[in-house]
Length: 470
Picture 1 (cartoon, rainbow, N blue to C red):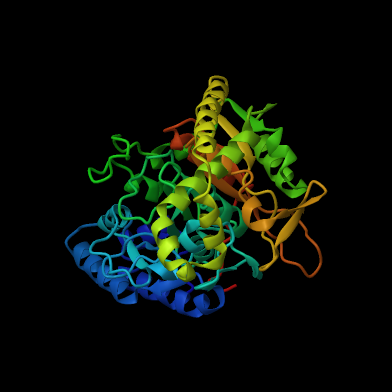
Picture 2 (cartoon, rainbow, N blue to C red):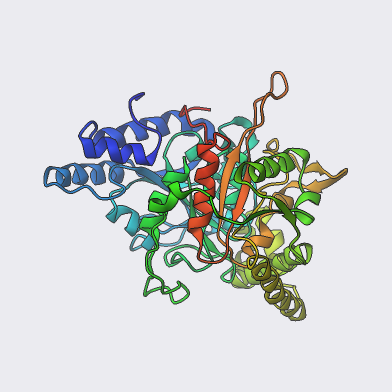
């Protein structure tokens, strides 16, 4: 297994050169998963037969001279994506009795057409409502950097699977930070594209006006490689922007020369631990950011995002809450029930602030091309830890891991996360990563990814994927 690469770009190269067959790569990935998943609980379903069948078909295609862009790359998906023949759980036992999906979600179809090999479905917070993946029904997903700590959420299985070297790419969703939080806590790269950039058809919804689909990966190059495959409009998803593919892989090496970059201060400093502040300042210095700026109304934006999340999430599940409340996971049931009671006047005010806040961000982007902020306020907390210290006060863990991500997804901006690692650490304790958000104007994912790649090239950001076991 040691010769099997950990990065998607390396899998593609090994397959194209004939060094490895797709079947060899798939078998090695499945062996890694079988060895590590019992301790991590990243997967809820392993699709071994499918992965091997896809690999076999790919090997046959190579004999005919066919080599698609993600050829022989193992991947997995958060279990809110439809996988043909499997029930879409969305982390919730209440969905377990639903019929199996009749077809793959469009993003899975695109991955398959590009030659990627599906290895399974990944654990998550129930109904995507959480930041820790401590799932009462399907168990907690453990962080490969320290199995006693959370992987983040709600795409916790996705972050853990990539961080453990089980797959180089995992698909996830991000409503208030559900890709960026696990990317930060697990120490991998993540991308939340612009709202409506990727089609959401075939995925279980949470908050329709905030849900994004995206991915986590072992490197900035792997992010771009997969993101370029995933792009494009989808007729079945009217919300998906009718935009063509805007390739990012080819521009990665441009770096950040000529870009106007600033670090977000104010709210983003006030709600960040010293470690999170260190990460943002180091990234800013490395990328040449010369100014610290504030984004007006950020605290109110986070509050407004909470209101909209509660109201839309509660409304979506209202009928089931009335008829089958006992089947909901306790942690999400309470929050969804509370959401059904949010007054309409509150959501109207929240939407008004959303429009105003978007204008504040647009005004900043008249002067800057990229903004830098911490991704999480702290590093990964211990499993079961109900609160953490921030600014001299104790705050609840499950709600506040998204303190720094929630205001940005509220207005749909594209964000890449790059993982940074502190030097040293305390004796006997693992060194834990923490991510930075690289935020660009709408539709400029290329700028986010260029900045992530620049941090990687400067040896500041690194996923440190060297082993399949925690």
